Image (cartoon, rainbow, N blue to C red):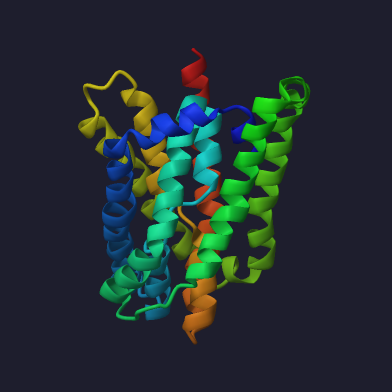
Length: 273
């Protein structure tokens, strides 16, 4: 997020806020399309794959949470000028998850989960607002220093991202290697794939006449396909007595990160051609 701030300006964020149509498309992807796919694959987990009901509930829970901050960095790597819009969409969806996550979890799973409002707002400030503000201020008042550190930020950001992906995998390795692990990986792969594709085509249809339609498609695809699986994992551990509910979120953290940054490598090559 600091790297995004260094490479952006306040004007970029003002322009992003002036695109309510794109923000609305992101909301539809995150809180309508994604929960639909979560319900679909959660149901298939129980009815077709004969997995425990708790596993199906875990898949549905993953689909109820807001977008992941990693989607902002993925957008920054692919379409840097779209990063402010991605940050605005993710921040707004995270803030409104206070309402959407309990409501969706009740509709899909039948369990209304309380969400820590103060903790969620604190997370937004720490992970998004503070580092971006620091980067913007550095860019504005110390441009020479900003130029000096810019070459080092991409590899540092990749390293930090690797830690973000690797630490949940290490912590939850037993869950990933559980007897149901392979089936869960397959179902979550299908869930994330359909979410990425749905977001891409939703934006393609909505903004087909826009000059930056391809960039919008990639941005909203990241917003739809990547979500805060760590929040889902925390909710599963706190509010569900069956530990199997936490297995899909643990797998999702790693899988959606690998898939998202796989798309970064694919799309960034195309944007450079």
